[in-house]
Amino acid sequence: MIELMIVVSIIGILAAAASPVYIDYTIRGQIADGLSVVASAKIAVAEYFQEHGTYPADNTEAALPAPAEIDGSYVISVTVAGQLISVRYGNNANSHISGETIVLTADGTTGSLTWSCISGGVIQDKHLPKSCQ
Image (cartoon, rainbow, N blue to C red):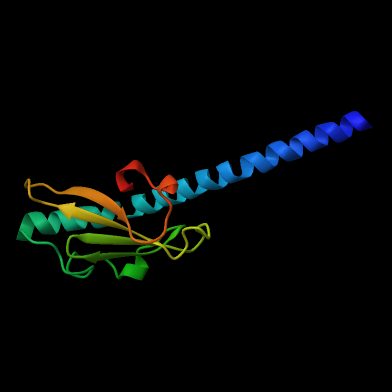
């Protein structure tokens, strides 16, 4: 009986240690999924930039649906504003990132667009992709 209690205690300790690691892993996955939702907006901004030589003022000018209509499992909106694309997390997102925003910024000085990423809120660096840290 004592051996069984020891085994149960060890399993409990291992589960307690693994829980924060699993939460971090799921948050990183949710952020990555949100950044994949932005792919169509990045393409629309790039096409507009190639055609006009400037950035679109908003989703409508970029020929995209309204911000709240671009969503995903963890994203509630994708907003285009000039060279910025904002991804706002919500829906089924973890409470650590729900309501937070990541902003992608375009740089067209080389003729083609390159994208960089900044956290628009309090998302911890350990949850962000390397391109956003």
